[in-house]
Amino acid sequence: MLDIIKNKIILIYTILLSILSWGIFALEDSSGKGILTLLNVILLNVPLVSIIFSTIYLYNSSEFIELLLSQPIKRSRIWVSFYIGLLVAHWISYIIGVAVPILIFKFSAVGMILIIVGILINAIFISLAFLSTAITKDKAKGIGMSILLWLFFALLFDGIVLFLLFQFSEYPIEKFMVFIAAFSPIDLARILVLLNLDVSALMGYTGAIFKQYFGSQLGMIVTFSLLLIWAIIPFMISKRIFNKLDL
Amino acid sequence: MIEIIQLKKSFGKLNVLKEINLSLHDGESYALIGPNGCGKTTLIKSILGIVIANNGDIRINQKSILNQFDYRKSIGYMPQIGHYPSNMTIGNIIEMIRVIRDTDEKIDEELYFAFNLHHSLDKKMSTLSGGTTQKVSAFLAFMFNPNLLILDEPTAGLDPISSEILKEKIIREKNNGKTFLITSHILSELDEMISQLIYMQDGAVLFHLPVDEIREQTQENKISKAIATMLKNKFYVTNH
Image (cartoon, each protein chain N blue to C red):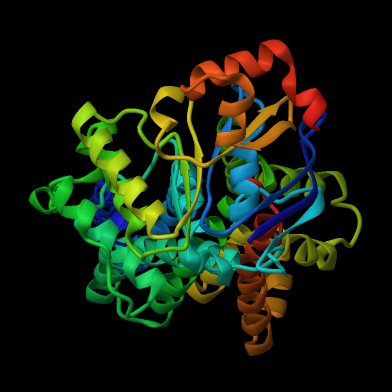
């Protein structure tokens, strides 16, 4: 949608992303290390911007959605168009800001995986934004919920995982940890990239388990499908709610 | 023909509409009036499918509109306050609605020129005044020659000249056999525009009468005075 692309915030976000990626590649001596730094930036910033911007945008568009509803157009189509609009706008920012520098500095399998992971992360967090918008009509509550979701996945989830690891370090819970990781899209994405960077040794014994699970072809497919599910399911739920929503 | 059958709607514990029964005939012009918060806008939004009722049915030409969207092709809606994406221009908005409607029908450009919108096609929606936004809404409502026009406070925020243009347009279209559903708090301006009057209070229809009959009963010529007399004397009780 034209409106989103013309939005100043999206423009600033694109510039910010490019400065970050160019800066990182210029500062780090090896592009491998660059990828690692970039990974952390992506996993923290991209979800934050996608979820918060989309939530606020949707709330600000509520009257416009109302106007669209008075036109002969299916409810679910309106919702899907907004999703596609936001997604495309974020993808354009991401591709200009991150994908292009990666392709220039580090054109490799890991680079490609990082690009794809970022694209999926965009879709996942926009999808979550739609869910929190559909759940509550109150703008403050909706934005709060989005911030909490981001906090949970970006920071708290890791804390919980670490806590579990320490508490149950005596028990063989590695397989369980793999299962737990599926519940956080950010962790899934991180594992996916790290394993392809060959730094999984840093992750210790659990890392070996992860490598066993995620490093193989099958593991990759499973992780990608999990990420896809993360992008689709919240949006589908939100669409069902929206179909019955009063505006 | 629109039939509203036992329509109920509540937001949480608040009963906004309590069993509304109405039938609106083609070619008539209805005024929907009542105090603030009596459920006028909710009723309009239910007809448009923006609000989904808890109970009851709305039928347009014998067809239920629940979970339908095609019927809106023949409805033009002008909201009380229009909100449009702020980064789009007037031209963008018009083009977009055209794409959504996707018809080859001739576009009614009368208001477009009357409101001088063609001079400000490149203006962004966020820079427009409330009145200009209303002009855009009015034009969009009339654009596709709909049979039913739903206007929520059409002249609120318009300058006197524009509001006169809009009123004349309404009267002209009414004489062309279009059906109107108009809400307004400015009763004096309704005089020439309407033929039937629906008075709502606390989510229920208090009375629904042809304007001529109201005038006859109350011996008042002006609608505003007639309604005041009606409410004072509670004429509607005998008529209900």
